[in-house]
Length: 198
Picture 1 (cartoon, rainbow, N blue to C red):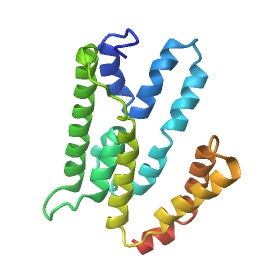
Picture 2 (picture 1 turned 90 degrees about the vertical axis):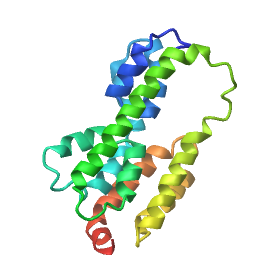
Picture 3 (picture 1 turned 45 degrees about the horizontal axis):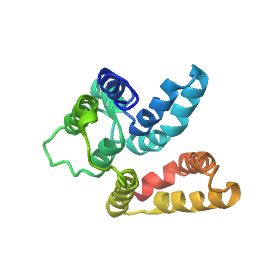
Picture 4 (picture 1 turned 45 degrees about the vertical axis):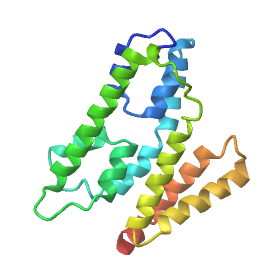
């Protein structure tokens, strides 16, 4: 944002409202391109579609959280999902409060990091080459955490198999959306069995 000439207010406000890092990265060229709100909306939905899977996984955990439930849904991101899904909450600790504090703290870290990056971004002089691998690493860690926590690995194996099938059918440039749709349909259809297995 800084290099593209935007004030630090833009990344700060985007971090508060969007709270999806991948969409924030895409927002820069979208803001600089010709005004096309429909294309921006479709792009944001496609990139953020993984939150559907997070949401399905967290349905049972968000039950009986009362007024905290809308906030838990709003604040959910990759890191928040990973922590709240895998955390072993001690006896006597309110589940909803625990997950809400994790969510709020992640939100504050995200907003403050984006704001500081917007303010001091022009002063960074070291090479950031290779940092794009951080996202891939984070998703691998989330996958491994879920694998170790869950007794049944059906959903994880289903995700891998359907991704490979989609890759073979649609090629490397077009496989992501069909793979996510197949996973969504399969996980929705198998939800009762997966709940019994876990």
